[in-house]
Amino acid sequence: MVTARNLCKNYYDSLGNIVQACVDLSFEAQAGEVFGLLGTNGAGKTTALRMLSTVLRPTSGDAMVAGHSITHAPDRVRASIGFLSSDTGIYGRLTAREMIEYFGRLHGMSDERINDRVEEIADVLEMREFLNRRCDKLSSGQKQRVSIARTIVHDPEVLILDEPTSGLDILSAAQIVRFIRQSRDRGRCVVFSTHIMREAEKLCDRILILHKGTVRLAGTLAEICGRAGTNDLEEIFMEAVGEIQS
Ligand SMILES: Nc1ncnc2c1ncn2[C@@H]1O[C@H](COP(=O)(O)OP(=O)(O)OP(=O)(O)O)[C@@H](O)[C@H]1O
Ligand SMILES: [Mg+2]
Image (cartoon, rainbow, N blue to C red; front, side):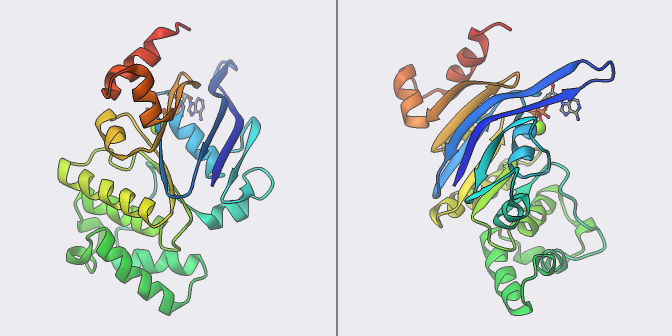
């Protein structure tokens, strides 16, 4: 469903020096699987997810997302994915329902299909209580659910979520975790980033640890824990990012 091949992204700082935000990133994530991209601040998670979502063009390398190349067919990729970024905006003057409808129309969906999806999404993300409230009156957890709702209105095959639980309390975060599990159970491929190891432990089928733009460890959670001889992902993570000095 998602196959990244040697993705690289270089940025330039104000002095013209190269910042290698992502170096030779390769991985595969299947349908019906939750893939976790783990890394500390500045590891390159957002850069990687923005490349997969076609928001950023890779410096080199390519990825196939839902059967399409991010470099050769970015429009097709965009139609097949739902991308939640930290700056996925919502319009304060619209209600939660109007937000979902608006993005449904942008995707060219019929009114009937949009109405069906609003019902489904309101159930899955537990949005009934605030569906008809203006977005600027919502709590941050509710706003985050509206952001997710608008990114999945077209029921994409691949969900790319950049730190979907960031800043949320334990209950709101648990709702998002439930939603990710349900998406997986419906055969969707979910690629998400986090620096919360507990979350990755609970959710991921496969993980990749990114540190300073490079892959430090990758595999199924079961393989990785088996090899490390512990189920403590925090410990595994610390070792993976601490071992190699750069
Ligand atoms: N537009 C840019 N120009 C220059 N450098 C950038 C740019 N965007 C990101 N970087 C650098 O690239 C590296 C990776 O950043 P990125 O945002 O991908 O990390 P991240 O893993 O998402 O971090 P966080 O957990 O803080 O969100 C960082 O060193 C960052 O400073
Ligand atoms: Mg980030």
